[in-house]
Length: 423
Image (cartoon, rainbow, N blue to C red; front, side, top):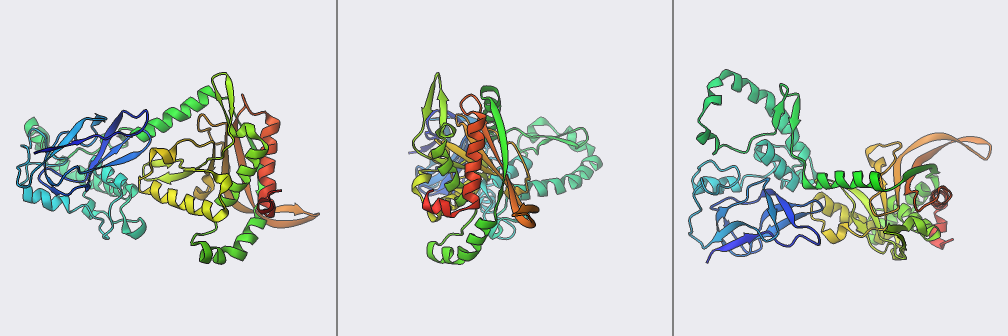
């Protein structure tokens, strides 16, 4: 009997998604639990596995289509079943090819260097019409990134423009023929100087939450600077031993997570939230760490950061970062944080004013480390200095508390032995 491919439950309060990309085409053979399609929501990306072994006989929701939980988006028939006619439910990008041609194409989307394309790269290729087999991957292990596809699409535009002018008759083809063409590239405007691309659910959600934060919270930012010399010395002295024992690199983030937790304990209002007319003080410390994912900036949460050592924090951040790049974070890994740390310094940011992640009350912004001349005991010395920024909700946190919070973090980073002794 045919097996329907249904949109699975996507998490609490999430009822709809967008079809990001299909991994298979009509006529392809699939096995049980083989990933068939990626669905993108406003919070996470979900892979839908095959519910049965057989042949894809129908794909009813094309790339870019909005679907609801429980919707049937395709059908798996028994081995030997014929796919539905292309006019009724064509596979994405299909144009009337024989099943054997489609099977060859389904095996094609590999990076030019041999790496597996990232899900975001597949989606971008579908939007722009770029052949993934021609794209050189620059990611780890030769994986094709979204940026690689965008670069290939930009290079292809000038080459496509000339044939279009040389053969104006192409524009007069019957509409029936255009239905079987590959998915169109983003619509160029104003002679190719502008491009309109549909906003992804994740980007829409980020935009909504940032606007919500600006409209519902009284956001204020305070700044300070921190001398990173002591942390540098500590890392240089023990970084190889740390790797040998724990199998993880000793980075800066574990120091700032520990320093932030210490400050949150000293100033609990920064770890609280406003819920109606009540203030909720949280006695647990789930710290969100902003990382760049395959589809944009995401904030996975390090649970129980106050109970973790430096090695555990580094391992957890590394694990979450890998899952973010592969778009495999779950809703649970992204929700429930009590405080956030955002490190714009890895991109070269010198100073910024981070925006709150509602309903949190505070967010700590880290920036790049620059060697600067500073006065030390009456002498001018060159020290590695970082600017820190704390954005906070002034409805709940007073300016004095915010400044003292940031000074607390500064003191622990400049004397990291205090973190080890908890003083």
